[in-house]
Length: 240
Image (tube, rainbow, N blue to C red; front, top):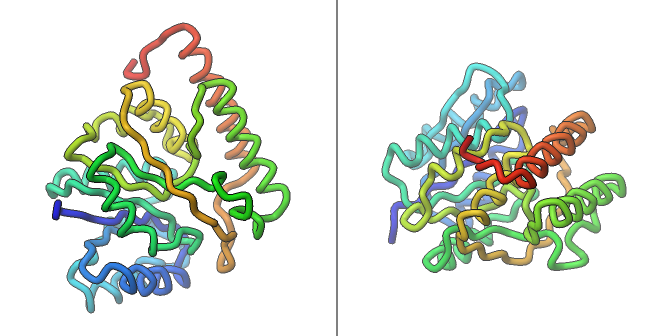
C-alpha cells in the first residue's frame, strides 16, 4: 500500500477535533493524520496535542495566524510531499465529512488522479442545510458549469489525491487561498486532462460550532470566478 495520510485544516474546532478523530479511527486504524491549525483562538491545538500524545501517527502544523482554508491545504500538501506520502486525503473538521468513505476513496485512487465526494448526486444530500446555504451552493455549482464548464462538485474539500499519478505542483498553481481554492484546483486538473472520480455522499450540516464561510467570502469567490472566466476566455494560462 502506498504511504497514505489525511490532512485536516482546523480553525476554532476544539470540540469537533476529538469527535472526528474517533470517527476516523473507527474505519482507519493506521492512517497517518496531519492537522493544520491556524492558531485557533479557542485553542484547538490543545486538543490536537492531547491526541498526539496517545497516537504517534498524528502530526500537526501550527501556523501563526488564519491565512485561509486554501492556504492551509497548500501548506499541508507541501508537508505531505516533503515527507514522501503518495496518497493524500483532505477533509473538513466540522463533522460534515464522514470518514467511512475514506477506504473506498483510497481504493478508487489506484485508477484516478483525484477521487472526491459529490453532494449533488443524491437529492437528499443537502436536506439538513439551511435554505440559503442550499441556494448558494447550488448557484455556485451552476455558475461553475456555465462559466468554466466544470461538471463536478468543485467546491468540496473531501478529496483523495494520488501523487503517484498527479503532479502535486498543479494544486499549488491555484492562486486563491480561500474557499475558491477548491474549484480553482478542479479547473486546473480538468485543463490538464486529469482523471477525476466522484462518489455520492449525503453531507449533513454542521451541528457543533459555526460555519467559517461568510457572505463576503461567497461574494469574493464570485468575483474571482469571473476573473478566471475572463482569463480562460482570453486563453491566459493558469500558470501565469
